[in-house]
Length: 207
Image 1 (cartoon, helix red, strand yellow):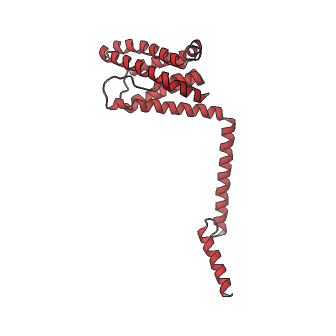
Image 2 (image 1 turned 180 degrees about the vertical axis):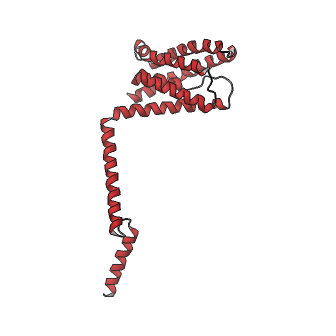
Image 3 (image 1 turned 60 degrees about the vertical axis):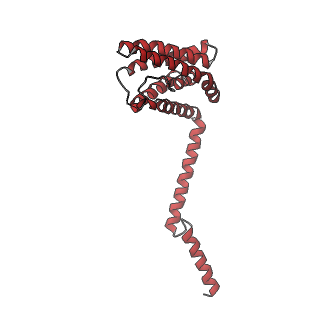
């Protein structure tokens, strides 16, 4: 073999050592199998998204609002004053209006449960909040229809109903009336702002 032949053989050997799968036949077969598996996975993912996009969209939105609601109340780990700054109500109302009562209730219950556990404030009085969320979740679609699709008025009305349900319950269970009053005032004010500015935009994005 001449000098040029050796150079060509060395070049081929170098290329094979640099390209994964060309070192030997078994490596090549493994590479082809992995590529085939990846292709099958991508096709299966495409088929799932094509045929079940509506269901996947609902689940994604629900997961987003659950996480948003839980994170929005983490400040309670360090702030011991009862303030009504939370996004559980927003997620509950939006999903109940857009996807039905069951979706709204799952978002509301799960979001509040995670929020209370993560903030270390889950107590027997939390069940009063669950009752309030159940009332809101069941009433949301009807309220939205009666108010002719006005999500701002719907959210504010349901927030008032929620606070009217939970405030007496908290006081009966021993909560300080002043702290309860502070929660109601801040809760109403915060949700009036959220449903006036954020909720209409979010609902349009979900259409």
